[in-house]
Image (cartoon, rainbow, N blue to C red; front, top):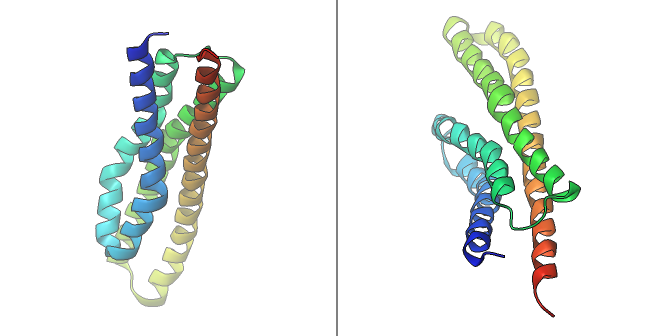
Length: 161
């Protein structure tokens, strides 16, 4: 086992898993609480394309550099993680952006109860897209966690007793 390759792999895995988990469950909720709605939205709009690209590409890089055999367990966990990132990047992110733009447009055209009626439909659609995005983000984290467990087990088996 090449020490440099294994070390680089572990550091990269730690960065990806730690970064995704920290941003998803610590930084983003704090930002939501302390920033104004427009500021939070602007922040997420800048971060999410890169965030989802990282979620999609990192498992592929991990698979290509794995210091353990990629049997069904580790490989399937990386596939789940990557597909989750791809789903967020290419389906849910554009859908969410589209709904947000529609909401901005109707806010310019309507007021009062007419605005409320039209916006209610879009809020519901935004809730669906956002909820699915959260689910796929969680599946990415779970896939990466499962890979980490497989990675740890595989590396522990290589340690001389």
